[in-house]
Every structure is written in structure tokens, then in C-alpha cells.
Image (cartoon, rainbow, N blue to C red):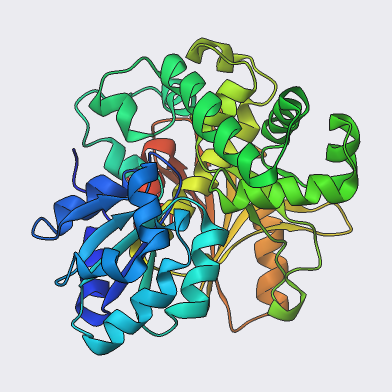
Length: 397
């Protein structure tokens, strides 16, 4: 077990609210985090059928068994329990009594919003970030190995070969749980759709194309993609414009939360395959996007992450926004800085400064090399320093 960066935020929320809801993908470490943070609270999982039936058939009796609170795992299995929990915490609103975890965003969020609004703090726990991953003694050190392995903690806790664990994860949690949510009977079609999504990493999503290639209707593709997002397998970043009311004009880019899952779906079975793989750059860009996403999630911050593309063809991989600062970020997997690496961020930065002088604009290129550099206003950040990408000392030796 490693120390998770989300721990301070989790404890802070538990000091404010009688309930804290922790969501995130399966096997991201939610249970481990909560049990470590609240060792005095009893733990109960709603995964076993008998426990789940108890919670569903006698919710008052179930909650009465935990008068001082509990960690309730996989709470999306019994969403009706939230209504009864509301009454319990209204009667005794001591902060930090109940810690709820769930791996299905929509199911849990709907139940929470309907019954526990104003009574619960919300925290998303993703697989470990690059900063957290380095706390494992067996963490990979090579970029290609990092991308191929991904960051699910059980690979490192239990010393399971990554290709074995990822295959089992996709077969059990992804194909089983997600298919159940969607009521999909055709495994082959769904597996094809998953692979097509992996092939669309770091690209704008075109539902008609995805659906057509998978042999499903546009609306079906839209539904399946939404559930993949709700299950924390993918996330999408919208297009950005300096005028926020226009930020959703452009299509959203699709990214996988875990690069290891994306690599496995693409049939990449060893790190060295990435060296010449045509999607290496896209996988690297998604990894950078995911790292930024994780950092913000674990701090409880908003996901103000975008990409940029305009009609003239100018594209920038990522735009991170915080108050009056916009970080324009290009992700380049090459280990040697090319003369054109900073071209697009420089062009967009010039345009944004002219159009929105109230914004502070920072220019970043995160790349697959080892040496931090500054060229003009652009900072070149080695991939190992991705956790410092949005700091003032990024790109300084």
C-alpha cells in the first residue's frame, strides 16, 4: 500500500460532511484508501449477494447495525439505501460517519444527488498518478514501460505481470460490468467497439464513424461511450476558446484513464512494440492528459481541461485553465526536441494574448526526453516531470 495524494482531501471532506462519497474505476484503490484513512470505522461491501439483499430488503435494519457509521463499499449496488441513509444522517449529522465508495459514476451520482444533496462530500479516486506510482519499489522507470504497464495498483502490490492483470481486468470488470450496465449480449461487437475507442485515443470523437466501424447505430455508440465514461474507463475533454461560452463548440477528444488498458485493447503486448507503433504519440498524449486529470481529481479541483482546434487547422493538444491562467500544452513522445515541437503553442499563445489580454498564458511542451529546457517563452518539460507541468519551475534544470 502507498500513501495516496487524495488522503488529505478525503479527511478534509470527512470533517465537513456526515457522508463522503468516493467514486472511481474498479481496482483504483478506493477501498484501500478509505480503510487506511478511517481505521476505526467498520467495513461492509455490498458486492456479496446476501449482504446486498439485507441492505435492499431491510435498509433500516442494515443501517441500524452501524450506529456510529461505516465504510460501505460498492454502494451503487443498492442505490435505494441512500434515501434511508438521508434520514439517519439528518437525525445524527456528525461529520465523517459514513464513507461510501462506488465504481459506477452515473448510478452513484444519481442516488447521491437525489437523496444526499448537501449532506455528502464528493471525491474521485483515479489509479495512482505518476507521482504516486513512484512510491512503489517496483514502479517502471522507462517511458515505454510506464505507458504499457499503466498504473493500477494491484499490478505493483501483488507483483502480477501487467499483460496478465490487464487481460483479466478487461475480461472481468470491463466486459462483464459494463456489458451488464448496457445489457449488451454480443461480446464480439462490444470488444470491437472497445478496441476502436482505444484506437481513437487523443482524437476527437465521431460517433457515426465509431458506430459504423463497430456495426452499431449512432445512438448506440453514444450510449456505449457514455457508459464507458461513467465507468471511468475513458474521459473526454471539450474544445476550448478563450471566450468560455464558446468552449464547447469544437468536438471533445477521447482519452483513456489508464494507458495500460488502452495498450492492451490495441494488442500491444510488450513495451518495445510502442517504439515504432503508429499510435505511440496518441497514447503518450492521453497519458499526459490523464496525469493532469488525476492531479486535479485527487485535490478535489475542477476538471478545467480542454484541447484546441480552429478552422485554420491550428491545434494544441491540451489547454489547462485555472482562474486567469491558461497553460497551452503540446505532448511529444520523442526523446529529442524537434524544431517544430513548440510551433503550435507559440502560435496559439500569440493569438490568445492579442484576443484575451486579461489571461496569463503559459507555454509548455512535455516530451519523451530527460532534459528540461526553456526556449523563448516555451518550457520543455521531461515526461518524468509531468507532475510539475503546471508549476512555475517546470522546464527548469
